[in-house]
Amino acid sequence: MVAFILGRASWGATYGLGGIWYGFACGLGLLVLGLTLARPMRALALYTVPDVLEMRYRSKTIRLLAALLSLLALVGILGAQVWAASAIFEAIGLPGTAGAVLATLVFIVYTAFSGLWAVALTDFVQIIIGSVGIFVAVVLGLIKMGGINGLKNALEGIQGLPQPASSYFSLTSLGASLLALTLLATVMYTLIGQDFY
Image (cartoon, rainbow, N blue to C red; front, side, top):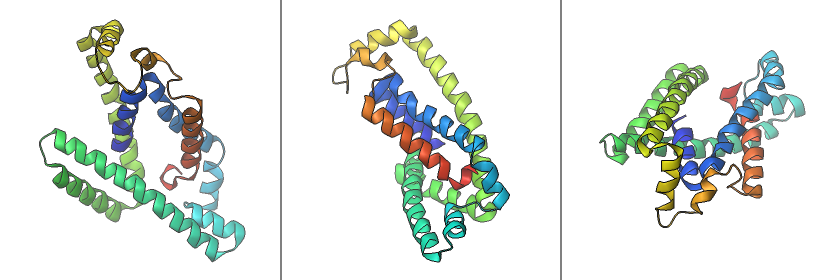
């Protein structure tokens, strides 16, 4: 969740309202998962994609390959989470490297003691805290900027923006190809995320 909030904040800074599509894709993926695959996966009492693939294709090789591919993806995701956590710790005064080490230790300890259930529970708590925090931050930010018009005026005064200031208020500021890729990749990832089941 920490990586999601910081990562999407960077998309908002780059694409404006168009940055909302990643969050939308996550929600859409969870909805599709809940309406299609979650119940059958839980009925099988299998919680990992490699387990399902081994059962379906009766192949330990397929299971091993799927596990290795999942490991590669999860290392990248964990790296993003450690980076995001270290940025938060740095913002509150702890050096970035120390924050990264602390975050990594916390991730390892609570996962080792509680397993995937701990991940699901902390995701749930983080979503609630993050959702409330984002809402409060948006309201406070708009108040400080003088509303939407104040924000528009401030953007027009900033040199070197990644795109024209007017594009920040467009839902299609990502462009068609990045929007399609974001929707497709994020929904597909959500359908195979073990912790989502």
